[in-house]
Length: 272
Image 1 (spheres, rainbow, N blue to C red):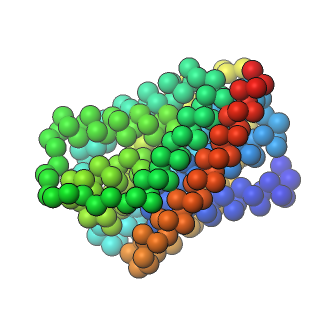
Image 2 (image 1 turned 135 degrees about the vertical axis):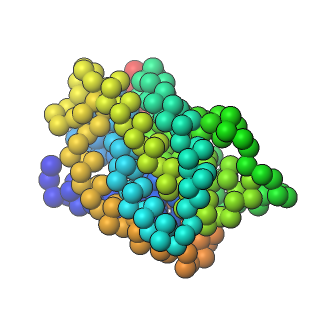
């Protein structure tokens, strides 16, 4: 790996770590398009590029979420009662998500990811406010919601914030608490999803050296080290800066990345 790639991976870690702490989104989804570019430049098998990008991006959340949630916890913003109720469903869903992804070819994964990013960016721009005051659902409802969050997160390599934050705010959880709680939810999402990607990717033909299942370990180590350092800064910023304005900036970045993944999906489809 040359110095240019090393610098690019470090920059990715800085950016995704700050975004994870600031917006409670885990950072994995932002990483996937950049990982796709890096793995393409390293000439990984086209059939594995997007799967590995998603798996490696998701694995970074294991480290980023711990760093981010510690900063949020110091602010007293994490709703641990919600974390406990969501986690069982998240663990189940996050294990199943990568298995579903394995059934699809890499072009389809890229196109699905492009759509997901575009929807997430639109959601950030719209920033709908919850109507009225509603209590959180019971254990069964929270398990089902957690399963949905985990399934989508494991499938797309995201921390789940784009799903969990709107769910929580719809039940009148304050936005700063929702962001902080989403950061905490990133750990069970990443834990189950990472183990699933290792299990279902084990023995896959064509995996490059230094891979563990679908996870490319050198990229994980470099990106995670930078993101862990930046996540606390993003978390502190979330409690001081006008986050809604920053959400708009990230939304337009996501649109640009969605366009790239759409183009990549079309290119991969033509290769098939």
